[in-house]
Length: 144
Ligand code: THU
Image (cartoon, rainbow, N blue to C red; front, side, top):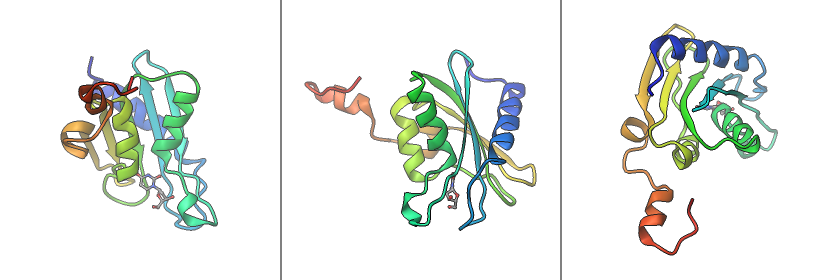
């Protein structure tokens, strides 16, 4: 079932709380994410930067890997909030990582000015994305 606007607002509150823990001394662009499993569990994430800049991990992936490490593979919504005005939408790498588990994921993206954008990952952010279904369709793969 699709998350209601109220549920997305609640998820966004968790993303805002998660952003408090962002470690972003290099960009000062702080991001928080809250990823909801289909059983209603929420995993929070923040961006964690590194002096070796490319080693940085985004808030969305921090939430995702925490959830997977806890045994969850089914997700229905993610809220993301960045810094500054306008909705912060997931970067390309995060879109791909999320697509693996949830092509229909509802992405509720926000900015500090209250701007929000709500879209489905596979429809609006990664159309025609490459995922396990493609490997399955080819047969013989090991995709779940
Ligand atoms: N970042 C995220 O955490 N999520 C996004 O959706 C966009 C970018 C982080 C990565 C880096 O720490 C900082 O924002 C600036 O790119």
